[in-house]
Amino acid sequence: MRKITICTFVLFLKVNVGFAQSFQIGLVKYSGGGDWYANLETSLPNLIKYCNTNLKTTINPEQAIVEVGSAELFNYPLVHLTGHGNVVFSNQEAENIRKYLLAGGFLHVSDNYGMDAFIRLQLKKVFPELDLVELPFSHPIYHQKYNFDNGLPKVHEHDNKAPQGFGLIYNGRLVCFYDYECDLGDGWESSEIHSDSLESREKALKMGANIISYVFIGK
Image 1: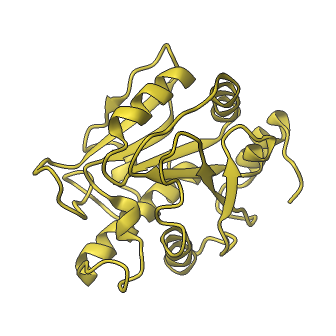
Image 2 (image 1 turned 180 degrees about the vertical axis):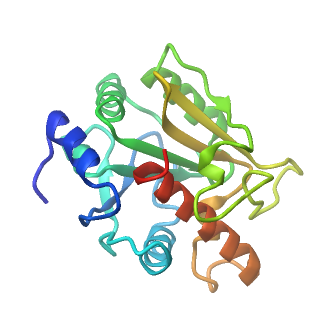
């Protein structure tokens, strides 16, 4: 895919309203020992298929794998980061993802369980001036094609906590959405990987579709 510079990346996002063009979603590869590849096989591909069917998007059915410090990050208007453990961004990587987000990119972080303490520190490295804030249930990300009046659906139970959706907001724009105690990415996995009910998987896919819709047409 042609490398998209910061300026052309912003233009790409502006002209892509309504899914007139095809695009690809990137899965973020990071350092620190955490399993960035936790949901590698079916999670994003299933979500992409769901969106192409139900939202009439034209997303490339194959996910890309992109290193957080790579210039290739700018090829993908939306990137997804997940895992269970440690996440480490070097100073160069933190600066790269900051530039990417300020240029119009969007980061979705899904805690598979065990990532929270680590990802919060790294996001603070990316935006020292910002704090993660819990989004109200009235936020548009919960009310795209599908309505989630009580916020994120609960996919997997870990610590008997309610799921929470947090965001980094820069100059009024949501640049990062972080689902915690939800396991949204696990909910996109194929049925043979987890024993989730069809209803649970459907809710997860619908919420994922809302994220896609919000990033491109629902702001």
